[in-house]
Amino acid sequence: MIIKIRRASDARPSEITDESVYLRRREFMGLAGGLALAAAGPLVGACGADLMSAGAEGEGQSPLTVKPRVVATDEKQNTFQEIISYNNFYEFGTGKGDPARYAGRLKTSPWKVKIDGHCAKPAEYLLEDLIKPFELEERIYRLRCVEAWSMVIPWVGIPLSSILKRAEPLAKATFVRFTTLLRPSEMPGQSDDVLEWPYREGLRMDEAMHPLTIMAVGLYGKTLLNQNGAPLRLVVPWKYGFKSIKSIVRIEFVDRMPDTSWAMQNPAWYGFYSNVNPNVNPVRWDQSRERRLPGLFQSHPTQMFNGYGDQVASMYANLDLKRYY
Amino acid sequence: MLRLIKVAVFVSCLIPAALLTRGLYIGDLGVNPAETLQLETGIWALRFLFASLAVTPLRRVFGWNRLVQYRRMLGLYAFFYATLHLFTYVILDRSFDLTGIFEDIAERPFITFGMLAFTLMIPLALTSTKGWIRRLGRKWQLLHRLVYASAIAASLHFIWKVKVVIGEPVYYAMILAVLLGVRIVVSLRKRTARALSPKPANP
Image (cartoon, rainbow over all chains, first blue to last red; front, side, top):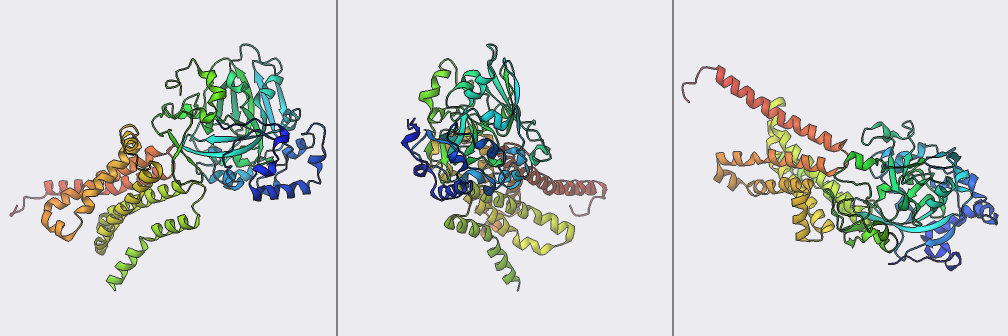
C-alpha cells in the first residue's frame, strides 16, 4: 500500500505538482493579489466566489486554498495537460477529445445542487454555499478507467460524508443517487441517444460515507475545467471511473439500489458496484492489467480495489464480488 | 505513365503508416498513443479492405476497368494494416501473453471476430501471387470469396468493440452492406436473365 496520510505541514504543493503547472499556479496566485492566501480564517473563505467563475480554458480557472496531500501516493502524477485533454464525458461526445473541444460552452455559474430524499434537512444549495463550510483537501488518487487505462490525479475536494451529514440522512436511506445536469443546448452529446440522459450514478450508503469518497471541485490546485466535470463531481477511487459522476445537480437519499447509467445501457458489461477488480472480467475488457497513461504498454498490474483495499475491502466482506461486479 | 501512377498509389498507401511512425517517434499521438495506433491501424485496414471490395462495383457501374490493376495492391495493404493492428494488440495490450490472448478469443466476441477477420485474410494474401492465381485457376476465385466473410467479421469486430454503437462503426457497416448488396443484386439479375433467356446452343 502506498497511500500516506500526512499532515498539512508535511509537504508543500511544490514538491508534488508538475513543475510547469506549479509555476503557472503561482502566477494565478499572484494575480489574485494574495486574496485567497490572505483569507486566513476558514481557508475556503475567499474561494466561494472564485469557484463560480471557473471558465472553460485554463486562463479562467481560479486558484483554490487547499490543505495539501491529505491522501497522497508516491506514484508519478499525470500532467495537467494530460488530465484535461483525455476524457470520457459522453455529454460532450464519445471521443476522448470531444469534452475538451466542446465543454467550454457549458455555463457552470450559477450552479445549484439539490439534496433531498430520505433526510431530515433536504435543501437546494448554491454551489458556493454547499462548499463554504468545509476545508478543501488535496487527494492524490489513482483513477482506473474500465477501459483498462489509468492516471494519477491530484484532486481538490471535500469528503462526501461532510456534505451528506449536513442533510441528516434518515435510517431508511440505504443508497445515494446522483444525477448529472441535463442541458442538451450546452451538452451536445445529450442529443445522441447513447445513454439514457441525464447520467445517473449511485453508491451504497457506507460507500458514500467512506472517508476516501470525495466531492471534487478542483484539480492541481485550481477549479475544475468543464471536461473534468465542473463544477462538482464525485471521486470514488476504488471504483471504475464511470462511477465518479460529473457535473452533479442532485444528490438523493433512497431506500433501494438506484439504476445507474452504464449498467442500464449494458448490464453484461457494467455492474452497480464496479469495484476495480483484476479477477473479474465481464465480457468486454480484461481487467488484470492496465495502461498507466501515457505509457504504451498495458503492463501495469491492476490492484484489487485499485490499491485501496486496506481501507475499503471490509465493506464487501459478505459480498460475492464475482456476482456483484 | 501507368507504371508511374501505380508507384504513386503504392507510396500513397504507406502514408498513414508513415504518419503514425512519425507521431510515435516525436510523441504526437495524444495522451494514449497505444490507443491511437490501434484505432488508426484498424480503421485503415478496414478502409483498404473496403476499397478492394469497391473495385468490382465501380467497374460495373462506371466501366472503370483499369481499377482492377490496383485490387491486389489494395487487398495486400488491408492485410498489411491488419497485421500492424494485430501487433498493437499482441504487443502493446498483451505483451505476447498467449494464455491471455486465447482467453480473449474465447470470451470476448469482438476479439473473436477480429481474429477471424485476420485469419481469413491470410490465405488470400498468400495466394495473391501470379503463380498461385495460375495454379488455382477457377478455384482461386472461389477461395477469394473469403474476403466477404473477412469483411463482415471485421465490421462486427468494430461494432462489438465500441461501448455505444453510433458513428463510425455504423457507417462502415452500412458501406459494407452497399458493397455486398450490389453483388447480391447483380447475381440475382444474372440468374433471372439466365432463367428467362432461351437455352444457349452451346452450354
